[in-house]
Image 1 (cartoon, one colour):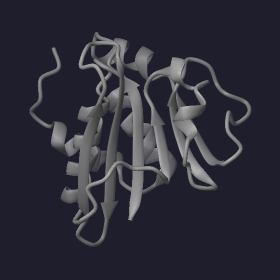
Image 2 (tube, rainbow, N blue to C red; image 1 turned 135 degrees about the horizontal axis):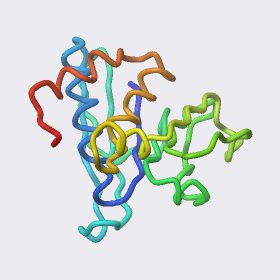
Image 3 (tube, rainbow, N blue to C red; image 1 turned 90 degrees about the vertical axis):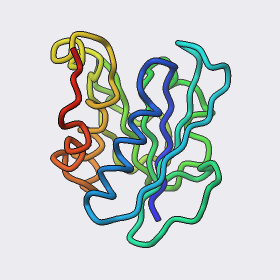
Length: 160
């Protein structure tokens, strides 16, 4: 089972991203599960969301304490040591950042994917919601799913 933990802020789409990704894995013939963890439910408050996928049914319903992959939607959270808590050795970090990071912010990271998701979202969607752009980076960096499968759950959804 592969476990992915998303960190963001309310309004950035972390919860929606985990749902899209879980649905995409199901459409690919795998099992997917996603759920959020909220603190204060308000725009801008820290949000953590969890997503698992596997070839077998997923029966685990707990938070993810030792993720294989971290997805960070909010660049201001990258300097928080709590974000990297429990990351498995050689884990994957996908981050939304305007500038390329030349060295890993954490020693356990095996693969690092950086995308300026907010700028792309502004150009393509007209509002700064980095979640779907970051999912494309997840597909490209991990190779676990194609970006085409990620887009399938979005078909027919109007963004404007």
